[in-house]
Length: 325
Image 1 (tube, rainbow, N blue to C red):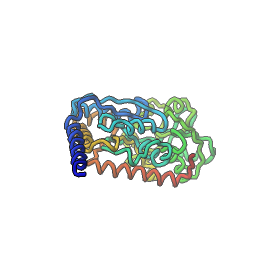
Image 2 (cartoon, one colour):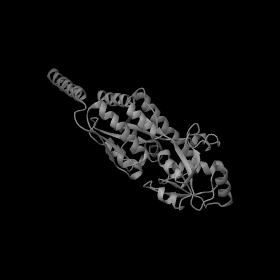
Image 3 (cartoon, rainbow, N blue to C red):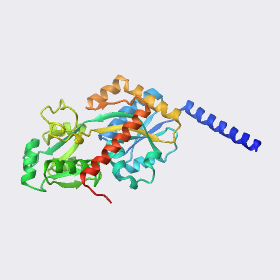
Image 4 (cartoon, helix red, strand yellow):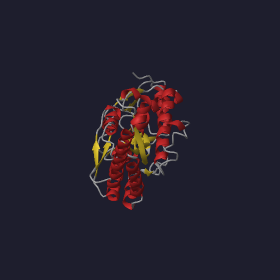
């Protein structure tokens, strides 16, 4: 028995030594960041900006890999089931790693709480609720509510699907304002063409999408979801100003990893995020895209923050009255 115990102890020490060596060597090959949306959106842009910074810090290529579809679950599961060695990460979002986790836990083939860990918050992207300028004579919040009350069900709004973040927000919005709108799901999230041509009336866009369309006169800003009014839209009220503080929900980006990744490797990734944020070019890219850089001081802070986001969406979902299969 003593011989067996000694052998098991030796095996344990060898395994521990292998993990320590692996952590010391990390990274020695390219790192991949999986993104749950198509290229060009807020989450993709966040991944590319922080990825460029981390590449400079770590001395290895950081590759963005877009895996849209399935409410973002495809991307989450690909990351969570990957080899937990730090070379496959995910740029999570409030829509996926907040709302979808809260509302659709049974759709995952993994246990999210057990298999996924937040490594660090990266940036917030202000969201703007906008109205189409095509054949829709609404230019502010008061006019929108007046039209909706006079024309029940005629205002068509978008989301990425039943029980998703935007659907939840708009269901609460309807309750608060005493209006009936028509929900139009867009699983791909590609709503811009239908907003421009007037097939959709009212949608939430991140500011990266909203700015050029507003400047082109294709849409009109109605509400912003930031705590304070945005410099680009000084006349546009916040959700809190309109009595709906629970809907002050920006688009956010944070890096996630398989929970089984060695702590020393996770620590190196977290440190790389912090150092990337300090690079002037990275700061400038975030600010020029109207993003608000955020840094989690520790990984524990990141985990607690993500848990809070999931709980917030659970509460909002309960209050929305939406039912999902």
